Image 1 (tube, rainbow, N blue to C red):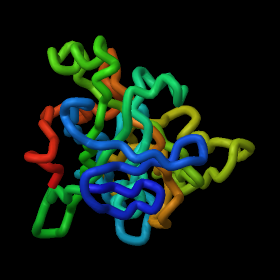
Image 2 (cartoon, rainbow, N blue to C red):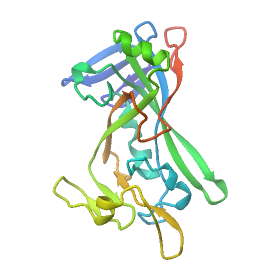
Image 3 (cartoon, one colour):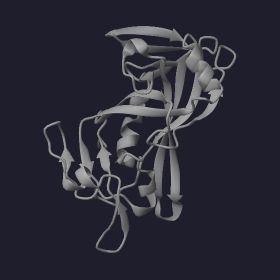
Length: 237
């Protein structure tokens, strides 16, 4: 498979990634890279025409209190493709261990009868074998967690709807003092306070990196599930 990360177009056999304002074609095979499949982030469902998270999906908020609506993740998960692969979020391109070769969205029904659902984003991370110590730790399960980094154009409080669009916007009291905590609304339902990152608009969130971690991540589902062998006789499908 070819992944054209600059335009997000897929072809076959190589990845073309934009780094330092240039394109670089990389042959994807298991002799140079190890390929790891990971569920990296999940979304939450919002009440109809609202910023409020449904009670049954509030448990999918990250432990740091950040989350994405179904619509935001669906529109922006593709920006993972071509993102850097770092270690412990040390975001120095020269120290990159590889890149994210592909990303896919999975719809998970919580209650099909009422169309309650969330999305998981699975990524395929290519880690170069030149990083021999890291590769050894990944293959021996000494390191098994991944965490993502993203840039966000706008965010919103899931309790009051207060929006943040730049570094000069002030946090509402909920995000400043109670982010990630629960509250009970006027109808008696238990709700979660979270920072909703991005919107349904494409480009409102850009996933910039996926880092191997030595400690568990904010999203505890983000552990490596498979190591895949990829080459001419075993292509990415």
